[in-house]
Image (tube, rainbow, N blue to C red; front, side, top):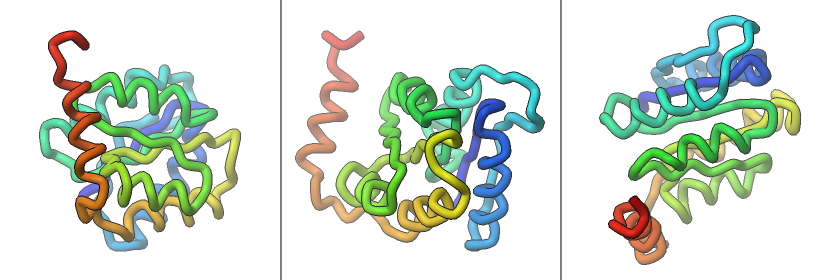
Length: 149
């Protein structure tokens, strides 16, 4: 699977750990930055990762900032993107199984590298099977609603 990954400066160190782990799991990774610890605004990185998924260049994404909140909010502003913040294994797994989330977000100031790696495994090791299709269709309908534009 091709995975887009990105982080702001707060998530840089964890992104590097997760990037290596995802590659170790056998996935291809496209890194959207940041590429050092210099200050980077999370909306810029989250938008690029989300657009790469919108355009079909990547199948899923992982975004990391200090809390995971800012990148989730930003990615969810993009039409058709469902980003889910998860700081535990079960939520990371359900992000994909229940919500067909294309992006997993996490906070580097909330969880450590080992928990983050397990969350990424939970998210990447399951595939959407359509079990909550009716609910996902409703989310998409809101996203595409003229009243919402």
